Image (cartoon, rainbow, N blue to C red; front, side, top):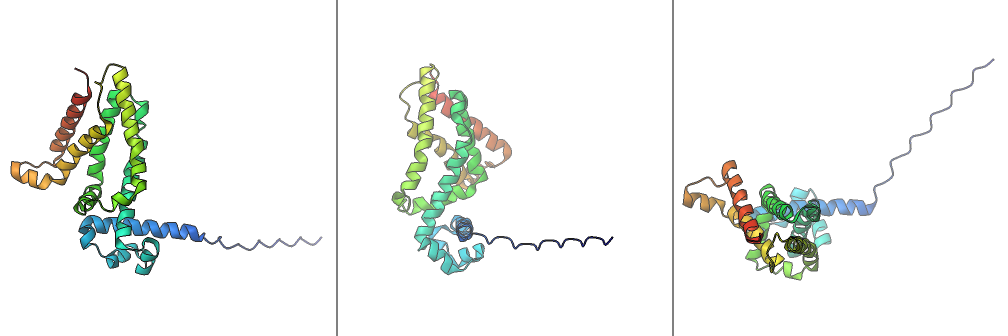
Amino acid sequence: MPRPKPQAEPPELPEPAEPRSRDADRSQQSILLAARDEFALHGLGGARMDRIAERADLNKRLIYYYFTSKDDLFLAVLEKTYADIREAERHLHLTDLSPVEGLRRLTEFTWNYYIKHPEFITLLNSANLHQARHLEKSERVREMNSPLIQTLGDILERGRKEGIFRGGIDPVQLYISIAGLAYFYLSNNHTLSAIFGRDLMSLKARNERLSHMTDVILGYALKD
């Protein structure tokens, strides 16, 4: 009895082509990452589109196709920078914590995020140098920051109702204080270290600073 002929293996089908929209998203993300590093290192004035294209390994014309100008690209980088920190804050689930722990966690997070992302500080320095004329055009940034202020306001109100926090605390002012306590220290650590003759970025000094920040913020919010 003749043996049955083995069936031929079906031909391997080529992988489906990646959608063009996915290519575009990947290219834009590469541009934003390269531009973030360039702007953080050289500021808006010193940044060069040629170097951004080289960092992203893309044609410079493609950058202009997506972002039109260096100013538009700088705004897109700032928006992405704010989106990243706001997204990280959402993962803290602050409303699931007690008011005291929520305020403590936000303070700790802000400090540690600035340390892990020094580009955040240098980009804000550059934006302020240009009087925030880019951010003033961005509705997106204002929309991204509103939920954080709402969350902080809810924490403060919950603490007030529980008799833990005093009333009348403006969540915007309080957040500016949290950010400012971290921002000034880190953005000026070289001059402060030189002036006071201390290494303010040593692990011991950083831990002391975070402890001080937490005491200041909670000391302000807690009821006497």
